Image 1: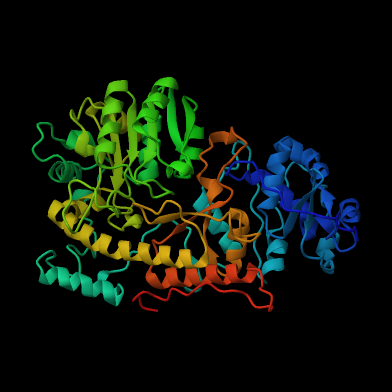
Image 2: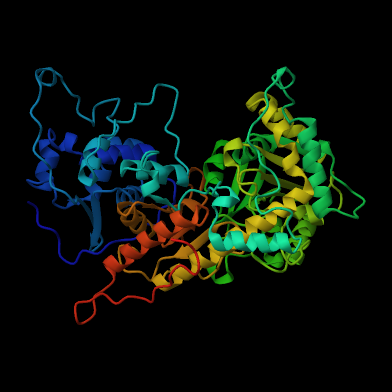
Length: 609
Protein backbone atom coordinates (compact mmCIF):
# COMPACT_ATOMS: atom_id res chain seq x y z
CA UNK A 1 0.00 0.00 0.00
CA UNK A 2 1.23 3.50 -0.81
CA UNK A 3 2.37 5.35 2.30
CA UNK A 4 0.49 8.51 3.22
CA UNK A 5 2.55 11.69 2.88
CA UNK A 6 3.75 13.41 6.03
CA UNK A 7 2.11 16.47 7.59
CA UNK A 8 -1.06 16.30 5.57
CA UNK A 9 -3.63 18.97 6.35
CA UNK A 10 -7.11 19.52 5.02
CA UNK A 11 -7.41 22.25 2.46
CA UNK A 12 -10.29 24.66 1.90
CA UNK A 13 -11.91 24.92 -1.46
CA UNK A 14 -12.38 28.24 -3.18
CA UNK A 15 -14.98 26.93 -5.56
CA UNK A 16 -18.66 27.93 -5.58
CA UNK A 17 -21.66 26.08 -4.37
CA UNK A 18 -23.46 24.19 -7.09
CA UNK A 19 -22.21 20.67 -7.55
CA UNK A 20 -21.47 19.66 -11.12
CA UNK A 21 -23.43 16.44 -11.23
CA UNK A 22 -21.51 15.05 -14.20
CA UNK A 23 -18.16 15.65 -12.54
CA UNK A 24 -19.23 14.14 -9.24
CA UNK A 25 -20.65 11.10 -11.00
CA UNK A 26 -17.45 10.58 -12.98
CA UNK A 27 -15.23 10.91 -9.92
CA UNK A 28 -17.40 8.53 -7.93
CA UNK A 29 -17.00 6.02 -10.72
CA UNK A 30 -13.20 6.17 -10.61
CA UNK A 31 -13.09 5.45 -6.85
CA UNK A 32 -15.91 2.90 -6.87
CA UNK A 33 -15.53 -0.77 -6.07
CA UNK A 34 -16.91 -1.64 -9.49
CA UNK A 35 -14.22 0.31 -11.33
CA UNK A 36 -11.30 -0.70 -9.11
CA UNK A 37 -12.17 -4.39 -9.37
CA UNK A 38 -11.27 -4.20 -13.07
CA UNK A 39 -8.99 -1.13 -13.39
CA UNK A 40 -5.68 -2.73 -12.42
CA UNK A 41 -3.65 0.36 -13.37
CA UNK A 42 -5.58 2.70 -11.05
CA UNK A 43 -5.73 0.09 -8.29
CA UNK A 44 -1.94 -0.29 -8.46
CA UNK A 45 -1.61 3.48 -7.95
CA UNK A 46 -3.82 3.27 -4.85
CA UNK A 47 -2.23 0.20 -3.30
CA UNK A 48 -3.48 -3.30 -2.54
CA UNK A 49 -6.47 -2.14 -0.49
CA UNK A 50 -7.07 0.94 -2.67
CA UNK A 51 -6.64 3.29 0.30
CA UNK A 52 -3.33 4.83 -0.71
CA UNK A 53 -2.90 8.50 -1.61
CA UNK A 54 -3.10 9.53 -5.27
CA UNK A 55 -2.43 12.95 -6.81
CA UNK A 56 -5.56 14.92 -7.66
CA UNK A 57 -3.67 16.40 -10.61
CA UNK A 58 -3.56 12.95 -12.18
CA UNK A 59 -7.30 12.44 -11.68
CA UNK A 60 -7.99 15.92 -13.07
CA UNK A 61 -5.98 15.02 -16.17
CA UNK A 62 -8.10 12.00 -17.09
CA UNK A 63 -9.77 12.37 -20.47
CA UNK A 64 -13.33 12.05 -19.17
CA UNK A 65 -12.69 14.66 -16.46
CA UNK A 66 -11.13 17.04 -18.98
CA UNK A 67 -14.24 16.71 -21.15
CA UNK A 68 -16.26 18.01 -18.22
CA UNK A 69 -13.92 20.64 -16.78
CA UNK A 70 -10.32 21.82 -16.91
CA UNK A 71 -10.69 23.56 -13.54
CA UNK A 72 -8.50 21.65 -11.07
CA UNK A 73 -9.95 23.62 -8.13
CA UNK A 74 -13.43 22.42 -9.06
CA UNK A 75 -12.18 18.82 -9.09
CA UNK A 76 -10.68 19.29 -5.61
CA UNK A 77 -13.87 20.87 -4.30
CA UNK A 78 -16.02 18.08 -5.70
CA UNK A 79 -13.78 15.39 -4.19
CA UNK A 80 -13.98 17.11 -0.81
CA UNK A 81 -17.78 16.89 -0.86
CA UNK A 82 -17.87 13.17 -1.53
CA UNK A 83 -18.42 10.61 1.22
CA UNK A 84 -15.77 7.92 1.53
CA UNK A 85 -12.88 10.12 0.37
CA UNK A 86 -10.24 12.17 2.19
CA UNK A 87 -8.52 15.13 0.52
CA UNK A 88 -5.30 16.61 1.87
CA UNK A 89 -2.46 18.97 0.90
CA UNK A 90 1.27 18.78 1.49
CA UNK A 91 3.70 21.35 0.04
CA UNK A 92 1.15 22.52 -2.55
CA UNK A 93 0.53 18.91 -3.59
CA UNK A 94 -3.14 17.95 -3.34
CA UNK A 95 -3.89 14.25 -2.85
CA UNK A 96 -6.95 12.09 -2.32
CA UNK A 97 -7.65 8.59 -1.04
CA UNK A 98 -10.49 6.25 -0.20
CA UNK A 99 -11.19 5.88 3.51
CA UNK A 100 -12.31 2.24 3.32
CA UNK A 101 -10.47 -0.78 1.87
CA UNK A 102 -11.58 -2.35 -1.38
CA UNK A 103 -13.68 -5.45 -0.59
CA UNK A 104 -13.13 -8.74 -2.45
CA UNK A 105 -14.73 -8.90 -5.86
CA UNK A 106 -17.96 -10.96 -5.82
CA UNK A 107 -17.96 -14.20 -7.78
CA UNK A 108 -19.33 -13.62 -11.27
CA UNK A 109 -22.41 -15.42 -12.49
CA UNK A 110 -22.24 -17.15 -15.91
CA UNK A 111 -24.21 -14.24 -17.37
CA UNK A 112 -21.80 -11.71 -15.94
CA UNK A 113 -18.79 -13.66 -17.20
CA UNK A 114 -20.06 -13.33 -20.73
CA UNK A 115 -20.71 -9.61 -20.45
CA UNK A 116 -18.14 -7.21 -21.83
CA UNK A 117 -17.63 -3.81 -20.19
CA UNK A 118 -16.17 -0.78 -21.91
CA UNK A 119 -13.36 1.19 -20.38
CA UNK A 120 -14.86 4.31 -18.75
CA UNK A 121 -12.41 6.66 -20.49
CA UNK A 122 -13.45 5.33 -23.88
CA UNK A 123 -17.16 4.73 -23.28
CA UNK A 124 -19.59 7.31 -24.62
CA UNK A 125 -22.04 6.52 -21.83
CA UNK A 126 -20.50 6.34 -18.37
CA UNK A 127 -21.80 4.31 -15.47
CA UNK A 128 -23.48 6.68 -13.08
CA UNK A 129 -21.08 6.03 -10.18
CA UNK A 130 -21.28 3.13 -7.84
CA UNK A 131 -23.90 4.47 -5.52
CA UNK A 132 -24.51 0.97 -4.20
CA UNK A 133 -20.83 0.34 -3.50
CA UNK A 134 -20.45 3.77 -1.90
CA UNK A 135 -23.41 3.29 0.37
CA UNK A 136 -22.23 -0.18 1.41
CA UNK A 137 -19.32 1.64 3.01
CA UNK A 138 -21.82 3.67 5.04
CA UNK A 139 -24.81 1.32 5.35
CA UNK A 140 -26.01 -1.99 3.99
CA UNK A 141 -28.43 -0.83 1.34
CA UNK A 142 -28.55 -0.86 -2.45
CA UNK A 143 -29.00 2.22 -4.60
CA UNK A 144 -29.53 1.85 -8.33
CA UNK A 145 -27.17 3.61 -10.67
CA UNK A 146 -28.50 6.87 -12.08
CA UNK A 147 -29.87 6.51 -15.60
CA UNK A 148 -27.78 7.81 -18.47
CA UNK A 149 -28.86 11.07 -20.08
CA UNK A 150 -30.39 10.56 -23.52
CA UNK A 151 -29.38 12.71 -26.51
CA UNK A 152 -30.59 16.30 -26.41
CA UNK A 153 -30.75 16.56 -22.61
CA UNK A 154 -28.31 17.67 -19.93
CA UNK A 155 -27.61 17.00 -16.28
CA UNK A 156 -29.38 19.76 -14.32
CA UNK A 157 -27.63 20.86 -11.11
CA UNK A 158 -29.69 20.33 -7.98
CA UNK A 159 -30.62 23.18 -5.66
CA UNK A 160 -29.08 22.95 -2.21
CA UNK A 161 -32.08 21.40 -0.47
CA UNK A 162 -32.63 18.76 -3.18
CA UNK A 163 -28.94 17.84 -3.13
CA UNK A 164 -28.79 17.38 0.65
CA UNK A 165 -32.00 15.34 0.62
CA UNK A 166 -30.51 13.07 -2.05
CA UNK A 167 -27.46 12.59 0.13
CA UNK A 168 -29.64 11.86 3.16
CA UNK A 169 -31.49 9.21 1.11
CA UNK A 170 -28.15 7.53 0.46
CA UNK A 171 -27.71 7.32 4.23
CA UNK A 172 -31.10 5.74 4.86
CA UNK A 173 -33.54 8.64 4.89
CA UNK A 174 -36.95 7.77 3.42
CA UNK A 175 -40.64 8.23 4.13
CA UNK A 176 -40.50 5.10 6.27
CA UNK A 177 -37.50 6.27 8.34
CA UNK A 178 -38.21 10.03 8.43
CA UNK A 179 -39.40 9.82 12.06
CA UNK A 180 -35.88 8.76 13.06
CA UNK A 181 -34.28 11.77 11.37
CA UNK A 182 -34.19 15.51 12.05
CA UNK A 183 -34.53 17.55 8.88
CA UNK A 184 -33.02 20.92 9.75
CA UNK A 185 -32.09 21.46 6.11
CA UNK A 186 -35.32 21.70 4.18
CA UNK A 187 -37.10 25.06 4.13
CA UNK A 188 -40.51 23.81 5.16
CA UNK A 189 -42.61 25.02 8.10
CA UNK A 190 -44.33 22.47 10.27
CA UNK A 191 -47.92 21.88 9.15
CA UNK A 192 -49.19 20.55 12.50
CA UNK A 193 -52.49 21.79 13.90
CA UNK A 194 -52.38 24.07 16.99
CA UNK A 195 -53.87 21.35 19.19
CA UNK A 196 -50.62 19.42 18.66
CA UNK A 197 -48.32 22.32 19.56
CA UNK A 198 -46.31 22.28 22.84
CA UNK A 199 -48.25 22.75 26.05
CA UNK A 200 -46.72 26.13 26.94
CA UNK A 201 -47.60 27.52 23.49
CA UNK A 202 -51.19 26.31 23.78
CA UNK A 203 -51.46 27.93 27.21
CA UNK A 204 -50.27 31.21 25.71
CA UNK A 205 -52.89 30.99 22.97
CA UNK A 206 -55.58 30.33 25.58
CA UNK A 207 -54.50 33.49 27.41
CA UNK A 208 -54.89 35.44 24.15
CA UNK A 209 -58.44 34.11 23.78
CA UNK A 210 -59.27 35.13 27.36
CA UNK A 211 -57.93 38.65 26.68
CA UNK A 212 -59.90 38.96 23.45
CA UNK A 213 -56.80 38.98 21.24
CA UNK A 214 -57.86 35.75 19.54
CA UNK A 215 -61.33 34.39 18.88
CA UNK A 216 -60.10 30.78 19.06
CA UNK A 217 -57.00 28.88 20.10
CA UNK A 218 -57.41 26.41 17.23
CA UNK A 219 -56.98 28.90 14.40
CA UNK A 220 -59.23 31.12 12.26
CA UNK A 221 -59.82 28.53 9.53
CA UNK A 222 -59.87 24.80 8.93
CA UNK A 223 -59.30 23.64 5.37
CA UNK A 224 -60.31 19.99 5.24
CA UNK A 225 -61.36 19.58 1.63
CA UNK A 226 -61.35 21.17 -1.81
CA UNK A 227 -64.58 21.03 -3.78
CA UNK A 228 -64.44 19.89 -7.39
CA UNK A 229 -67.44 20.50 -9.61
CA UNK A 230 -68.36 21.13 -13.22
CA UNK A 231 -67.95 24.85 -12.56
CA UNK A 232 -64.25 24.67 -11.73
CA UNK A 233 -62.97 21.93 -14.03
CA UNK A 234 -62.54 24.18 -17.06
CA UNK A 235 -59.42 26.14 -18.01
CA UNK A 236 -58.75 29.16 -15.84
CA UNK A 237 -57.06 32.50 -16.50
CA UNK A 238 -53.24 32.03 -16.72
CA UNK A 239 -52.95 34.82 -14.15
CA UNK A 240 -55.41 33.19 -11.78
CA UNK A 241 -59.07 33.26 -10.85
CA UNK A 242 -60.66 36.70 -10.41
CA UNK A 243 -61.98 35.91 -6.92
CA UNK A 244 -58.52 34.87 -5.68
CA UNK A 245 -56.78 37.84 -7.28
CA UNK A 246 -59.35 40.23 -5.77
CA UNK A 247 -58.85 38.64 -2.34
CA UNK A 248 -55.07 39.14 -2.58
CA UNK A 249 -55.53 42.80 -3.59
CA UNK A 250 -57.90 43.36 -0.67
CA UNK A 251 -55.44 41.70 1.70
CA UNK A 252 -52.65 44.15 0.74
CA UNK A 253 -54.93 47.20 0.74
CA UNK A 254 -56.34 46.54 4.22
CA UNK A 255 -53.08 45.52 5.88
CA UNK A 256 -50.63 47.91 4.19
CA UNK A 257 -52.43 50.66 2.27
CA UNK A 258 -55.24 52.04 4.43
CA UNK A 259 -55.77 55.73 3.77
CA UNK A 260 -53.69 55.75 0.59
CA UNK A 261 -55.20 57.16 -2.60
CA UNK A 262 -53.71 54.37 -4.70
CA UNK A 263 -55.12 50.88 -4.11
CA UNK A 264 -54.25 47.52 -5.66
CA UNK A 265 -56.89 45.80 -7.82
CA UNK A 266 -57.17 42.31 -9.27
CA UNK A 267 -55.32 43.61 -12.32
CA UNK A 268 -52.23 44.09 -10.11
CA UNK A 269 -52.18 40.42 -9.07
CA UNK A 270 -51.15 37.15 -10.73
CA UNK A 271 -51.71 33.79 -9.01
CA UNK A 272 -49.08 31.16 -9.80
CA UNK A 273 -48.27 27.57 -8.84
CA UNK A 274 -45.48 28.27 -6.37
CA UNK A 275 -42.80 30.85 -5.66
CA UNK A 276 -40.18 29.43 -8.01
CA UNK A 277 -42.68 29.46 -10.87
CA UNK A 278 -43.47 33.09 -10.04
CA UNK A 279 -39.76 33.93 -10.32
CA UNK A 280 -39.49 31.97 -13.57
CA UNK A 281 -42.39 33.88 -15.11
CA UNK A 282 -40.86 37.18 -14.05
CA UNK A 283 -37.46 36.31 -15.52
CA UNK A 284 -39.16 35.26 -18.74
CA UNK A 285 -40.87 38.66 -18.89
CA UNK A 286 -37.63 40.63 -18.39
CA UNK A 287 -35.59 42.09 -21.22
CA UNK A 288 -31.85 42.13 -21.90
CA UNK A 289 -30.79 43.73 -18.62
CA UNK A 290 -28.29 43.87 -15.79
CA UNK A 291 -29.99 42.16 -12.84
CA UNK A 292 -28.44 42.51 -9.41
CA UNK A 293 -28.70 39.89 -6.66
CA UNK A 294 -27.16 39.57 -3.22
CA UNK A 295 -24.73 37.11 -1.65
CA UNK A 296 -25.82 35.10 0.23
CA UNK A 297 -29.41 34.52 -0.88
CA UNK A 298 -31.92 31.83 -1.84
CA UNK A 299 -30.24 28.85 -3.56
CA UNK A 300 -32.78 28.47 -6.39
CA UNK A 301 -31.82 31.88 -7.79
CA UNK A 302 -28.56 30.42 -9.16
CA UNK A 303 -29.92 27.87 -11.62
CA UNK A 304 -32.92 30.09 -12.41
CA UNK A 305 -30.75 33.03 -13.47
CA UNK A 306 -28.45 30.79 -15.49
CA UNK A 307 -31.34 29.70 -17.73
CA UNK A 308 -32.21 33.16 -19.01
CA UNK A 309 -29.37 34.33 -21.23
CA UNK A 310 -30.85 37.81 -21.61
CA UNK A 311 -30.21 38.42 -17.90
CA UNK A 312 -26.72 39.55 -16.98
CA UNK A 313 -26.70 38.62 -13.30
CA UNK A 314 -24.44 40.79 -11.15
CA UNK A 315 -23.64 39.69 -7.57
CA UNK A 316 -23.56 42.17 -4.70
CA UNK A 317 -21.66 40.91 -1.66
CA UNK A 318 -23.17 41.39 1.80
CA UNK A 319 -20.45 41.61 4.46
CA UNK A 320 -20.90 39.57 7.67
CA UNK A 321 -19.19 42.43 9.53
CA UNK A 322 -22.22 44.55 8.56
CA UNK A 323 -24.64 41.82 9.63
CA UNK A 324 -25.20 40.90 5.96
CA UNK A 325 -26.87 44.25 5.32
CA UNK A 326 -26.31 47.10 2.86
CA UNK A 327 -26.74 50.81 3.57
CA UNK A 328 -29.04 52.98 1.47
CA UNK A 329 -26.04 54.93 0.24
CA UNK A 330 -24.26 51.78 -0.93
CA UNK A 331 -27.50 50.47 -2.46
CA UNK A 332 -27.87 53.57 -4.63
CA UNK A 333 -24.21 53.37 -5.63
CA UNK A 334 -24.54 49.70 -6.65
CA UNK A 335 -27.65 50.35 -8.73
CA UNK A 336 -26.26 53.39 -10.53
CA UNK A 337 -22.66 52.20 -10.83
CA UNK A 338 -23.54 48.77 -12.20
CA UNK A 339 -26.36 49.99 -14.43
CA UNK A 340 -28.95 47.73 -12.83
CA UNK A 341 -32.43 47.61 -14.32
CA UNK A 342 -33.71 45.16 -11.69
CA UNK A 343 -32.67 43.91 -8.28
CA UNK A 344 -33.72 40.52 -6.89
CA UNK A 345 -33.75 39.83 -3.15
CA UNK A 346 -35.56 37.91 -0.43
CA UNK A 347 -36.89 39.93 2.53
CA UNK A 348 -36.61 38.63 5.20
CA UNK A 349 -33.49 37.05 3.74
CA UNK A 350 -33.10 33.33 3.22
CA UNK A 351 -30.61 32.20 4.64
CA UNK A 352 -29.44 34.98 7.02
CA UNK A 353 -32.83 35.94 8.47
CA UNK A 354 -31.92 39.62 8.22
CA UNK A 355 -34.79 42.04 7.60
CA UNK A 356 -35.28 45.33 5.78
CA UNK A 357 -38.12 47.16 7.53
CA UNK A 358 -39.62 50.53 8.41
CA UNK A 359 -37.75 53.60 7.21
CA UNK A 360 -35.01 51.47 5.63
CA UNK A 361 -37.55 49.67 3.46
CA UNK A 362 -39.18 52.98 2.62
CA UNK A 363 -35.75 54.19 1.48
CA UNK A 364 -35.32 51.14 -0.75
CA UNK A 365 -38.62 51.86 -2.51
CA UNK A 366 -37.69 55.51 -2.90
CA UNK A 367 -34.32 54.63 -4.46
CA UNK A 368 -36.01 52.19 -6.84
CA UNK A 369 -38.43 54.92 -7.89
CA UNK A 370 -35.70 57.52 -8.39
CA UNK A 371 -33.22 55.27 -10.21
CA UNK A 372 -35.92 53.40 -12.16
CA UNK A 373 -34.56 50.06 -11.03
CA UNK A 374 -37.26 47.44 -10.45
CA UNK A 375 -37.20 45.80 -7.02
CA UNK A 376 -38.25 42.15 -7.24
CA UNK A 377 -38.82 41.32 -3.58
CA UNK A 378 -39.44 37.75 -2.48
CA UNK A 379 -41.55 38.28 0.66
CA UNK A 380 -42.45 34.63 1.17
CA UNK A 381 -41.45 34.92 4.88
CA UNK A 382 -43.23 38.26 5.39
CA UNK A 383 -45.01 37.18 8.59
CA UNK A 384 -42.12 35.35 10.25
CA UNK A 385 -40.97 38.55 11.97
CA UNK A 386 -39.26 38.86 15.37
CA UNK A 387 -38.57 42.59 15.70
CA UNK A 388 -40.47 45.39 17.45
CA UNK A 389 -39.87 48.16 14.92
CA UNK A 390 -42.52 47.06 12.45
CA UNK A 391 -45.37 49.11 11.04
CA UNK A 392 -48.20 48.34 10.89
CA UNK A 393 -48.03 46.56 14.25
CA UNK A 394 -49.48 46.22 17.72
CA UNK A 395 -48.34 44.37 20.83
CA UNK A 396 -49.12 40.94 19.41
CA UNK A 397 -48.28 40.82 15.69
CA UNK A 398 -45.76 42.20 13.23
CA UNK A 399 -45.69 42.00 9.42
CA UNK A 400 -43.62 43.62 6.69
CA UNK A 401 -44.07 44.38 3.00
CA UNK A 402 -42.77 46.93 0.52
CA UNK A 403 -46.42 47.42 -0.49
CA UNK A 404 -46.71 49.79 2.46
CA UNK A 405 -44.37 52.30 0.79
CA UNK A 406 -45.52 52.11 -2.84
CA UNK A 407 -46.97 55.46 -3.95
CA UNK A 408 -48.32 54.60 -7.41
CA UNK A 409 -49.28 50.93 -7.78
CA UNK A 410 -48.94 51.07 -11.58
CA UNK A 411 -45.78 53.19 -11.88
CA UNK A 412 -43.54 52.46 -8.91
CA UNK A 413 -41.10 49.69 -10.00
CA UNK A 414 -41.86 47.34 -7.10
CA UNK A 415 -42.73 43.67 -7.68
CA UNK A 416 -43.74 41.56 -4.66
CA UNK A 417 -43.88 37.77 -4.34
CA UNK A 418 -45.66 35.94 -1.52
CA UNK A 419 -47.98 33.01 -1.06
CA UNK A 420 -49.42 30.24 1.07
CA UNK A 421 -46.20 28.20 1.13
CA UNK A 422 -44.56 29.60 4.26
CA UNK A 423 -46.77 32.11 6.09
CA UNK A 424 -49.95 30.02 5.76
CA UNK A 425 -47.89 26.83 6.36
CA UNK A 426 -49.39 25.15 3.28
CA UNK A 427 -46.43 24.40 0.96
CA UNK A 428 -48.17 21.41 -0.61
CA UNK A 429 -50.94 23.52 -2.16
CA UNK A 430 -48.44 25.34 -4.43
CA UNK A 431 -50.27 28.68 -4.50
CA UNK A 432 -48.33 31.94 -4.58
CA UNK A 433 -48.84 35.36 -6.13
CA UNK A 434 -47.15 38.32 -7.76
CA UNK A 435 -48.28 41.85 -6.88
CA UNK A 436 -46.97 44.46 -9.33
CA UNK A 437 -47.88 47.22 -11.80
CA UNK A 438 -50.50 46.12 -14.35
CA UNK A 439 -47.93 46.10 -17.17
CA UNK A 440 -45.86 43.51 -15.33
CA UNK A 441 -48.91 41.36 -14.55
CA UNK A 442 -49.88 41.44 -18.23
CA UNK A 443 -46.38 40.30 -19.21
CA UNK A 444 -46.20 37.44 -16.69
CA UNK A 445 -49.68 36.38 -17.78
CA UNK A 446 -48.46 36.12 -21.36
CA UNK A 447 -45.46 34.09 -20.14
CA UNK A 448 -47.77 31.85 -18.13
CA UNK A 449 -49.96 31.18 -21.15
CA UNK A 450 -47.17 29.16 -22.77
CA UNK A 451 -45.19 28.08 -19.68
CA UNK A 452 -47.69 26.60 -17.24
CA UNK A 453 -51.22 27.68 -18.17
CA UNK A 454 -52.09 28.88 -14.67
CA UNK A 455 -52.74 27.26 -11.27
CA UNK A 456 -55.49 24.83 -10.24
CA UNK A 457 -58.90 26.49 -10.39
CA UNK A 458 -60.57 24.34 -7.67
CA UNK A 459 -57.66 25.04 -5.31
CA UNK A 460 -57.82 28.80 -5.83
CA UNK A 461 -61.54 29.02 -5.18
CA UNK A 462 -61.26 26.96 -2.01
CA UNK A 463 -58.53 29.25 -0.64
CA UNK A 464 -60.23 32.63 -1.01
CA UNK A 465 -61.45 32.68 2.66
CA UNK A 466 -57.85 32.26 3.84
CA UNK A 467 -57.06 35.77 2.57
CA UNK A 468 -59.55 37.46 4.91
CA UNK A 469 -57.41 40.16 6.61
CA UNK A 470 -58.90 39.67 10.11
CA UNK A 471 -58.31 35.91 9.89
CA UNK A 472 -54.77 36.51 8.64
CA UNK A 473 -54.01 38.70 11.66
CA UNK A 474 -55.20 36.00 14.06
CA UNK A 475 -53.16 33.38 12.25
CA UNK A 476 -50.13 35.71 12.37
CA UNK A 477 -50.41 36.04 16.15
CA UNK A 478 -50.45 32.25 16.48
CA UNK A 479 -47.63 31.81 13.97
CA UNK A 480 -45.33 34.30 15.68
CA UNK A 481 -46.11 32.94 19.13
CA UNK A 482 -44.98 29.48 18.03
CA UNK A 483 -41.97 30.40 15.93
CA UNK A 484 -40.54 33.10 18.20
CA UNK A 485 -40.37 30.53 21.00
CA UNK A 486 -38.75 27.99 18.68
CA UNK A 487 -36.26 30.63 17.56
CA UNK A 488 -35.24 31.49 21.14
CA UNK A 489 -34.92 27.83 22.09
CA UNK A 490 -32.83 27.10 19.00
CA UNK A 491 -30.44 30.00 19.60
CA UNK A 492 -29.90 29.06 23.25
CA UNK A 493 -29.02 25.48 22.39
CA UNK A 494 -26.60 26.60 19.68
CA UNK A 495 -24.92 29.05 22.06
CA UNK A 496 -24.46 26.28 24.63
CA UNK A 497 -22.75 24.16 21.97
CA UNK A 498 -20.37 26.94 20.94
CA UNK A 499 -21.88 27.56 17.51
CA UNK A 500 -21.66 31.24 16.67
CA UNK A 501 -24.64 33.18 15.33
CA UNK A 502 -23.28 36.70 14.93
CA UNK A 503 -26.49 37.94 13.30
CA UNK A 504 -29.53 36.34 14.99
CA UNK A 505 -32.49 36.03 12.61
CA UNK A 506 -34.95 38.93 12.57
CA UNK A 507 -37.22 36.97 10.26
CA UNK A 508 -37.69 33.59 8.46
CA UNK A 509 -37.18 30.36 10.41
CA UNK A 510 -33.47 29.93 9.64
CA UNK A 511 -30.26 30.44 11.57
CA UNK A 512 -27.11 31.31 9.58
CA UNK A 513 -24.27 29.82 11.61
CA UNK A 514 -20.52 30.32 11.42
CA UNK A 515 -18.72 27.02 12.14
CA UNK A 516 -15.23 28.49 11.88
CA UNK A 517 -14.35 28.03 15.55
CA UNK A 518 -15.41 24.39 15.81
CA UNK A 519 -12.89 21.56 15.70
CA UNK A 520 -12.00 20.01 12.31
CA UNK A 521 -13.74 18.60 10.34
CA UNK A 522 -16.76 20.44 11.76
CA UNK A 523 -15.32 23.87 10.94
CA UNK A 524 -16.33 23.56 7.27
CA UNK A 525 -19.88 23.26 6.03
CA UNK A 526 -19.18 20.00 4.18
CA UNK A 527 -17.43 18.34 7.10
CA UNK A 528 -20.28 19.39 9.39
CA UNK A 529 -22.85 18.15 6.87
CA UNK A 530 -21.21 14.73 6.41
CA UNK A 531 -20.75 14.08 10.13
CA UNK A 532 -24.36 15.00 10.89
CA UNK A 533 -25.69 12.59 8.27
CA UNK A 534 -24.17 9.84 10.42
CA UNK A 535 -26.36 11.11 13.27
CA UNK A 536 -29.46 11.26 11.03
CA UNK A 537 -29.50 15.07 11.02
CA UNK A 538 -29.87 17.04 7.76
CA UNK A 539 -28.49 20.57 7.33
CA UNK A 540 -27.77 22.76 4.29
CA UNK A 541 -24.11 23.72 3.59
CA UNK A 542 -23.55 27.44 3.29
CA UNK A 543 -21.88 27.29 -0.11
CA UNK A 544 -25.25 26.61 -1.73
CA UNK A 545 -26.29 30.17 -0.89
CA UNK A 546 -23.42 31.65 -2.89
CA UNK A 547 -25.73 32.45 -5.82
CA UNK A 548 -23.41 31.75 -8.74
CA UNK A 549 -25.18 31.29 -12.10
CA UNK A 550 -23.28 28.97 -14.45
CA UNK A 551 -20.42 28.82 -11.93
CA UNK A 552 -18.91 32.04 -13.29
CA UNK A 553 -16.98 32.70 -10.09
CA UNK A 554 -14.55 30.32 -8.43
CA UNK A 555 -14.41 31.89 -4.99
CA UNK A 556 -16.95 31.39 -2.22
CA UNK A 557 -16.95 33.04 1.20
CA UNK A 558 -19.36 30.59 2.83
CA UNK A 559 -17.30 27.43 3.35
CA UNK A 560 -17.61 27.87 7.12
CA UNK A 561 -21.34 28.67 7.16
CA UNK A 562 -24.36 26.42 7.42
CA UNK A 563 -28.10 27.12 7.37
CA UNK A 564 -30.17 25.45 10.07
CA UNK A 565 -33.97 25.48 10.02
CA UNK A 566 -36.29 25.65 13.00
CA UNK A 567 -39.26 25.08 10.70
CA UNK A 568 -39.92 21.51 11.93
CA UNK A 569 -41.79 20.53 15.09
CA UNK A 570 -40.25 20.94 18.55
CA UNK A 571 -39.60 17.23 18.86
CA UNK A 572 -37.75 17.15 15.55
CA UNK A 573 -35.78 20.29 16.42
CA UNK A 574 -34.72 18.78 19.74
CA UNK A 575 -33.73 15.55 18.01
CA UNK A 576 -31.62 17.52 15.54
CA UNK A 577 -29.95 19.70 18.16
CA UNK A 578 -29.16 16.63 20.25
CA UNK A 579 -27.49 15.10 17.19
CA UNK A 580 -25.44 18.26 16.62
CA UNK A 581 -24.34 18.20 20.25
CA UNK A 582 -23.22 14.57 19.98
CA UNK A 583 -21.10 15.37 16.94
CA UNK A 584 -19.49 18.41 18.59
CA UNK A 585 -18.67 16.40 21.71
CA UNK A 586 -17.22 13.63 19.55
CA UNK A 587 -14.63 16.02 18.11
CA UNK A 588 -14.09 18.21 21.17
CA UNK A 589 -10.51 17.96 22.51
CA UNK A 590 -10.10 16.04 25.75
CA UNK A 591 -8.79 17.76 28.87
CA UNK A 592 -5.77 16.57 30.83
CA UNK A 593 -7.77 13.83 32.58
CA UNK A 594 -8.91 12.28 29.32
CA UNK A 595 -12.43 13.60 29.75
CA UNK A 596 -14.28 15.75 27.24
CA UNK A 597 -15.16 19.17 28.72
CA UNK A 598 -18.86 19.88 28.35
CA UNK A 599 -20.71 23.14 28.08
CA UNK A 600 -23.62 23.74 30.40
CA UNK A 601 -26.77 22.05 29.19
CA UNK A 602 -29.59 24.41 28.40
CA UNK A 603 -32.40 21.95 28.95
CA UNK A 604 -35.75 22.37 27.30
CA UNK A 605 -36.73 25.85 28.59
CA UNK A 606 -40.28 24.66 29.29
CA UNK A 607 -40.64 22.83 26.00
CA UNK A 608 -41.86 19.23 26.06
CA UNK A 609 -39.51 16.35 25.39
